[in-house]
Length: 407
Ligand code: AMP
Image (cartoon, rainbow, N blue to C red):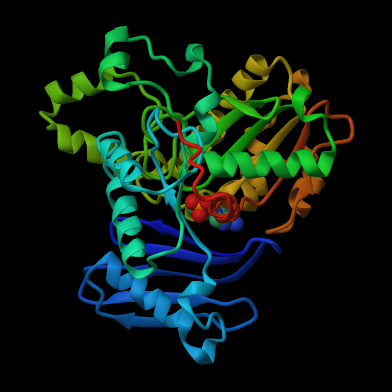
């Protein structure tokens, strides 16, 4: 089935057109800088040169139209009619407590996504904008919402409750939700199929290390703990996000630097993490380069990042009572042997042994085993494919339309 996957940010629309039966990307691309003087459009068709264009695009709806114009253009030979697209899968970051699974979008679902605006103010509003734009441009086709939070719905209350008055959970739903669910789901399923392990008994730790980073403990196929929390700000140190810190630091800063709430928000989300630590860059490649040139703060940022990975992985080995496999994915996890090695160094005492040669030999885009034969825990690099998970879910739900799986 041909499925269009849409991922909307505040000023961008990313798309993937996927043939789900063959798990194949037909075309993908992005419209960036929506609302700026000129927007940038990129289309990437396998086996063809990347197409780049600049246009005036002021709304998400216009961006969707620009994408459809490209897909429908005869000379590109992609689709001949909008009805060739059988379903649209939308990435929605926050499903709150309501959505434990992907869902066919109707007005009730849209209302619920809107109700979660407060929980993900940077993500859910543009996600809903994208849904409305796509419904306008592609009417009569099933639209399906796939939530980043859904996979972590299986967390037990001991893992998702914070140590604050319980009425705040009841009144405001303040709890751990977890994110990157489609990625943690995808790489764990890949591991099950390649290893042939008995899934019911399996204990796996997935490390999604990209610009945003999160780690999950997966037991018997279900997420039982994860590093991100109420929002995607917590857990690991990330590109520009702080990750976990002592909440007292915020009170201290309000007093000492007279910071307002919005400055604190921006400091923690946009100016912290690797960028804040290094004072140089949020991008791991740049940090590695500068650390090689002797920059001490870039090296410190790398050290903190790897130590964060080690702490979460070690904790989750305890939580899972042992671990069959540790899986690395996303930009850093898939592409940096140095970060993988540094994150798991000195863990042979608890059965985790990375093989430096296999690790260095891992090729981008390929699944590679990087543990030693003696390691009790297998270690793999598994490239993620969140869009494929969204497409397959959308295809499944579109095929069974009429039946709403949300609670
Ligand atoms: P993502 O958010 O998954 O696209 O990942 C982006 C992050 O991956 C950025 O910090 C990049 O610097 C990092 N990254 C991509 N390729 C490499 C590489 N070869 N070595 C180290 N980091 C990389």
